[in-house]
Image 1 (cartoon, rainbow, N blue to C red):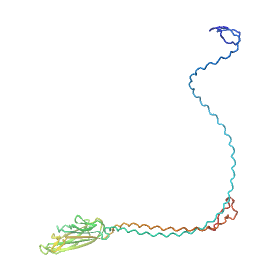
Image 2 (cartoon, rainbow, N blue to C red; image 1 turned 30 degrees about the vertical axis):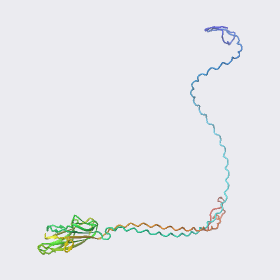
Image 3 (tube, rainbow, N blue to C red; image 1 turned 90 degrees about the vertical axis):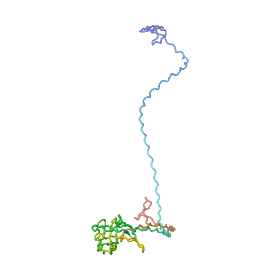
Image 4 (cartoon, helix red, strand yellow; image 1 turned 45 degrees about the vertical axis):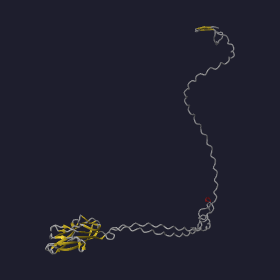
Length: 343
């Protein structure tokens, strides 16, 4: 039946809930159909259409909460430990045998020969003679005036060791010691009268106490030939290292002089110095260095070692028992001590 309504008439419709009834409403009058017939057979399946485009992957969902841990099962009971077997008794220990006699020691090897003695070192200065000096002067030394002391010049050195002449008149001692100082002077007097001369020693520019010697010189023999006299004076004194000594003189006339002579020719003779001075050490403390020690000789070979003595026989065994005389202790196999006969 046809349906007429808001959208026009239609011959098609659906099966109403109450077939054969008509309903008039907003959309027109509805004609009810009859009873629907049985469903026809299903037609064949159409071919599958193309696969649609894959949609985007959705967001990963939240992780669900972890489930509670299950209860741990009950631990089973531990099995029983098996019993330990009993310890067997220890057998008795025998007494230690007597130690064998020590073997005889081998004969010592012979001593090697002594090495050669080293050469003797050079003798030090003063080892035999000490320090010394021998000096002289070959010039005439007239007295310049009678009011001023005048130093005696000593211009030449014969030989010396540790004593020297400095500045032409200073006898200088390089080393401390006790020295014998001797000087011999030839003095002449050309005056026609007896004149006097005095000689003494100064040390480090200070007059040495009680060192002066005074002599009288006889008048001349003629106006051209003076009277000559030689005087010799000796001192013994101790000097410090670096100390210097000078000889001074003075006189009563400028006709006095310390006189020298050239070597003679007929007959031949040496020159005559106006002054001769010697300084010799009479006590010394220095010694020459000791020579180096010679090398030690090589040692002789060691003698062979003696053979080892044989081991002594083992001593007898001793019964083991408790000290208190009781029964052996079963916990220790009956061993509590060993009686070694007072050893």
